Length: 208
Picture 1 (cartoon, rainbow, N blue to C red):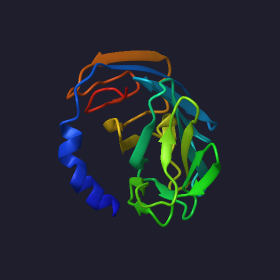
Picture 2 (picture 1 turned 135 degrees about the horizontal axis):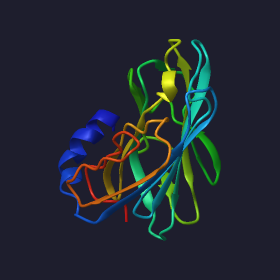
Picture 3 (picture 1 turned 90 degrees about the horizontal axis):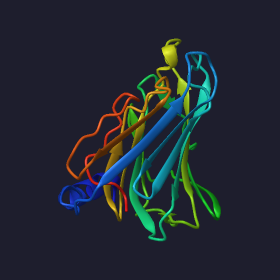
């Protein structure tokens, strides 16, 4: 089944997922100078660490963006698809997308949908599964090449993640690298939350 067909088939299920309290704790540090950027946030039992090897890449420079998901709950979370959002000034490097778990790094292509502002892996089609649990972290990683000199001006490399898992459909976008500081937000299913990092949002309840 393709990524697009999965999206259609699960649209109703995702929007009618059971409501639950959502708590997000967000932190990030970066500046406009070239260098690595790390942004972390929490949703329910999921802890996310998003790392950008250079938040202000020069034109033609290749960087790596990876997001690790670590769970504090014994409940297993299996991902049907996972999308990595990125600014249009970054171009995906072919064959670079990997999903790393306890058994090592796995290539995502050819089960990868590639667009100008995101890539999305279909993990219902792969020979392996993307599963996060308290005993296994998972990391989605990809390389991108900057196409313009201002791609990371003012620390503006931003993006986010979106995925459908056994716990629901979640979106965390506009994770701006120059946010700095610490912020928090609370809400419930169906709400859209904003953080000081420039628009971290979830359209459904937090992961259990």
